[in-house]
Amino acid sequence: MNPIEQAAGLLEGARHAVALTGAGMSTRSGIPDFRSPGSGIWEQVDPLEVASIFAFRRRPETFFDWFRPMARQLLTAQPNPAHLALAQLEAAGLIQAVITQNIDGLHQKAGSRRVLEVHGHLREATCIRCYRMFATELFAQAFLADGGVPHCPDCGNVLKPNVILYGEQLPAVVMWEAQRHTQQCDVMLVAGSSLEVVPVCDLPRLARQRGARLILVNLEPTYMDDQADVTLHADVTDVLPQIAQACGTPLAEHG
Image (tube, rainbow, N blue to C red; front, side, top):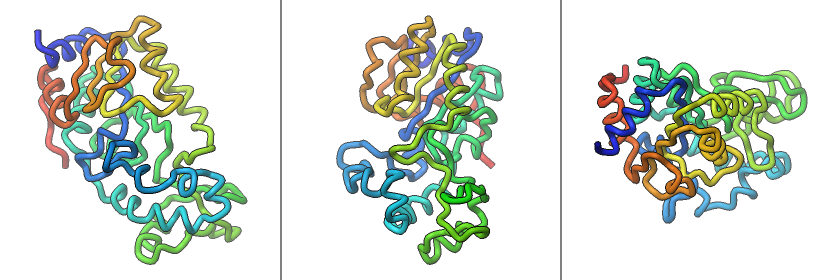
């Protein structure tokens, strides 16, 4: 049995399968990842200088100057075949939830319904003083056009996108749900994640310790490769549609 058929068999036989996705899911949608040698975002800037909560509070304009080009990519990106394949697997009842490290919302755009965004998202922003929350669509176009720092309509202080910066805790309720699915799952499909960012990188290990089967799909090796039942060092946009098709859920076209 080849690895695609083996992965499909594990998903078809699962009682509670979950997916864990990382930046490699979205590179084919035009969104660069953070750590790839030669092209990763963190090779160009120091994350603690531009993407930490401490730097944000000191110099929010520096964060927004850096973030504006990325925000344009994130807000205009479209799902690729890997996102669509996971949505098809969920629609077929073969995946119960998607735990994602990504903030781009592409899983939802592709049709996934149960998405746990452990690093936050761009749909809303919160005032750093009065903590009122606003939909980013209220100021996104103006921000992309002139690069100005968005301010709270009520108190005038800076609005921070609801993404997790260095130095911030992960959203407690979302992380609790991710851990619950990890404890319940009997199969975990890891797709496009280098498994280097804590604490999310521990989820496959925890799932494995509880007896879950593990499928890894990533271009580069991860620390869990030797513990996985199926390991595919390949592009998720090639592999996930093949797995979905082998499960009898041919990939639907988006839109």
